Length: 436
Image (cartoon, rainbow, N blue to C red; front, side, top):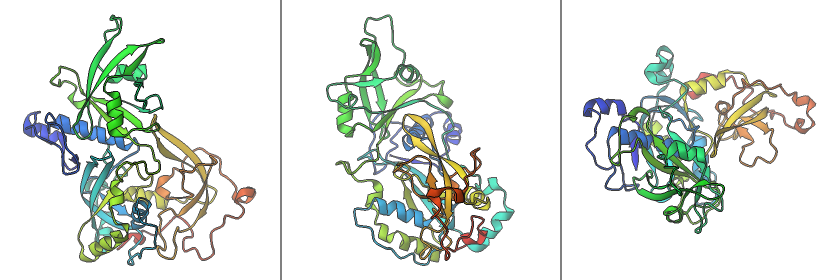
């Protein structure tokens, strides 16, 4: 299914008087059931569900925004999902930071494995256009640090599946508070309160479950229909399933079953080795050709497309202009303590802290003066395999109330020094490093 971020729900409400013409929201990437709708309410719900599946920290640029594109980061993401062995790819003399204007943004979902991803159309900006940015209002060019995020907070819960949840002989155990918030109310006067739930996934496919309140002690369970869902979606322990009931802007609307709000469900797959699932959409891209396409777009002053999967990579390689400028103009000396955010399925976010131990380019020969992962860090948590040893300035928050660390007094960090031939001597980089 494809949702275009250029579509404004409010304008459609005014045009259609609050209704829609019906139809299907799907593209060639997926299919949807015959009872799907393209009404503004339905479009908004699907957009909320996409963001819920992508994770709470996902923020995307919208059409007209000015962003900084990092070919080094794009190459890193694509190479990590390529079925081919890693190999050195020419940089085509591209600048490590390229300013672009967003010409289009789409929200997409892979029908085969429920992967959510976005496709951006980027137009490289000329040096003169970059200089003229200083005379423009931030709102005019979309230079705010944020991007497109959901406007309303839906009723939602997300749970990481246990072995019991994925067993073919069991059911899905739902926390009571989550069930009461997202599901229609049960009649607790009955001996065994139960009801049928109907929820649609990102592709518009309906899934029916039996919701029952039973056991000693009593608990909420999804029984009939759950094992079919687990089997067809190829879910395993460690994956996460979320249910979402969106009421927000359309709280007064009733669906055809007379319920307030519509129930949706989505999946956040755990990061794990290949498990028989269809490949990520990123694996279908030939990363060896990515930079040649970008180089051609720069030389011909034409737009190019990038695909990004927020669940596949923590680091964004398309960054809002103002966020980038703010991050590189603030001095970040060695020894700076910082915090950063990470997505966690069962909670809104997880904050991890660390210390900056060096400032150096990740690849100073092919990408000199690159700001991509130019900060060497040491995490406070030992054995954090999901953390990179080098991060980008816009990924961290140095304004936290953590005591500074003296690198010289730390025996573990004595050998961490900036190489003599390092072209980066600090993080206060000149703006013209962005020029094409």
